[in-house]
Image (cartoon, rainbow, N blue to C red; front, top):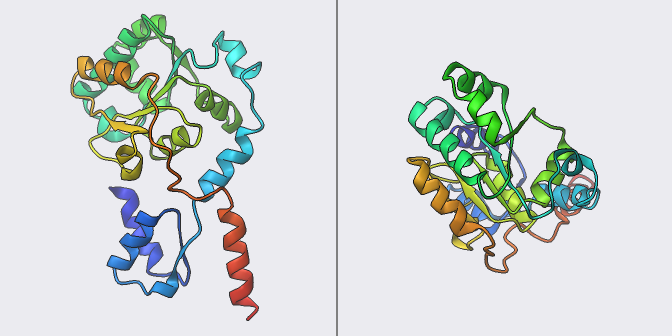
Length: 236
């Protein structure tokens, strides 16, 4: 996937390789990096999610504006080219969200490019009558939407992990995922958007589910560990 190209290039220019998980550390060692370069600290995204997750509540904010109850809606985020640029896949996503919205509200912060594609295809107006289509929101509003969703359906790399951070079941509308540990532990499920029926089934199956009690991304102190290591090495 495209992000891996940047990761590989950056790693080869780096002195310190701070890893978010044991799986990431194992990948680097298989690629030939020395043990002393690979430093397992946990995921700084987890640090951020914990910090800002404490700033939001189920009351007020965007949930109140949209008339939503905590644990009573599905959050959908779709933006990747592998879905947007393929009419059949995007149609499956749209039809699945419309069907899901018949029994559970669906909130969809709509990426401008996705909006333009749906409008050109003549699907936007019908979708807007069934699903709560909103403009992209700021970070804190998005934290609130993610933290209190009943389920997240996404093709975003980061949102998959944030769903886990907030202990919300997730289905990933892609053929693969960067975060295989979340699939293996039951917090995430791959659901390629081949047909609307398959997606609806995946959503219903995941609703109310919980994965294993795992901590693949550390304890929320990754940033502190990175600073401590840099301070030690640079002042040695």
